Length: 188
Image (cartoon, rainbow, N blue to C red; front, side, top):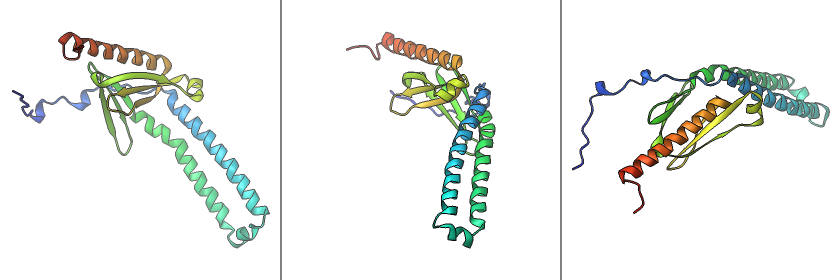
């Protein structure tokens, strides 16, 4: 008969007991460099639009509202500064932990989340990196559990990502082997 007894809250393991591993220290610089490239691109586009408006038939609009470009560039500068600073705030609050039966990933500054992916639900894993990631010596680990959706851990060192991928793959095979040995998932 199926039994599902209730556990008292005092007997649950503490979430604080997890030894979180930080992401690679160069991940902050990689994110900031990516933001810098986008900011420079948008600043160039904005400057071109500003020039066309200031010298074209819409120059009357700028004479009527001379503070408009100053406001637009001020907002752009404030948003750009926030985007450049944010990785230094967010990345230290991210981390991962590998336990015997699952892998955990935490993220978030204001809205924090912890995702746990049990190895017996993982179908496959992969590592990938963008050209900018490779320039900074970084890679990403993606874990694909059954039921859809990938869980990606960004900002790992290349060696760490590959070691984690190999470990998770080994754990998948071990879980599959245990299920087959028990007769629960073997061929009929």
